[in-house]
Length: 269
Image (cartoon, rainbow, N blue to C red; front, side, top):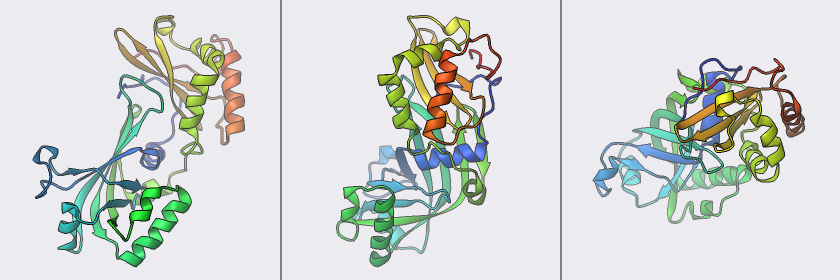
């Protein structure tokens, strides 16, 4: 995970970033210590069939009904675990991890009737055919979170679940990655215009430029060079709250002279 320059435009608060990272994360692992019947080299790290994380952090995790972790959880009321959530870049880069969130808490197996209702709610939010196995070959575990830790390019933070749930939602948490992919694949001229705001040492044709992240306050670009990777944040002139405002602001930045002081481009790290 490349680090950004500490002297950069404003970023969302750590709690906001923790909320967005947890909800957006494409990868999840449960860590519960060594488990009988599991590969000892995994160290108790279990990858769920599917995970769903709401703003509260009370994650729902789908596992095979005969998984050793499920068997262990059934023997006690609650099982202490750590949930690791990994947010990765939507486009190919050398260091794809944009952020990590760790949620410490405990899990319990949901009764079949409750699990099926939960699966329907999850499907309404994000349809996935794997949810059809809930109540048959698979079960759902519910995690009761106790603490949340964030690590991303802007810094780190530790929070209570209530602090994360109370943070402002990211307006681009569900559509930002597809927007970034579209920017890179269909709007090369805009990306070229944005490149003018990079620090001079990074404005070289041999460097690879990839849009890495977007939020209401700015856009983050990844510059891959033969000497390493650099994240540069370009701030927006005003917070954006919808795709229409986002498109207009990016076009403004692409056309704006880099000498203009409107958005404080980050320097090379």
